[in-house]
Image (cartoon, rainbow, N blue to C red; front, top):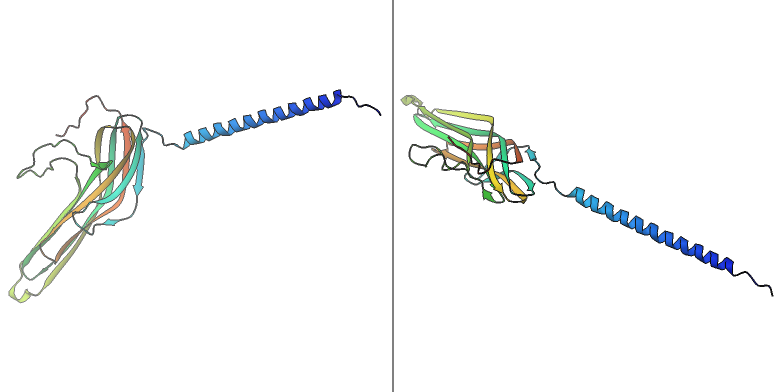
Length: 235
């Protein structure tokens, strides 16, 4: 019987072991690369902090229940540490009045649209410029800002032969209004900014009506660094 050389099998075993070792190393490198890519992807998808946020909404919002706040804009902003926020709101505002008089009488209708902001569910207010009282039309604070206000009144004096005559007037206005708020030392984290509008009306009878409408609107939330112990001066 002819013997086969043993060293050939040993060499092949070493080569096989090297191949398996290289494959393991390559697998580890690929796995590490996938892990690093996954970590980078997670880091890139997180929300940046202290960046300006903005939103624009189109379409009209009519107020079915006067006196009830209606959400008209919403945005979120992330802060990495306590900072200040400058908030700017603009909106197209419209008051529609319709008044009808019969014979000799007086009819009137008026409406008011006010806008205010909440941060994390809390109404944002500023210091009161003056105490509220008779003859002082200023709000106790600037939490709610008037964006539109319209009052329409008509008095007719007709002769005896015209007591059944009617006069009907329809008046619609639209304009863009804006206001800025400041929020000092908001905490770190993600903050929810919401803008609400509230409509109030006053009519003398069912023959006089008023309706408020909010049109296109925008909200800009800008993190800023104010001076130490900065306050809002209201003159």
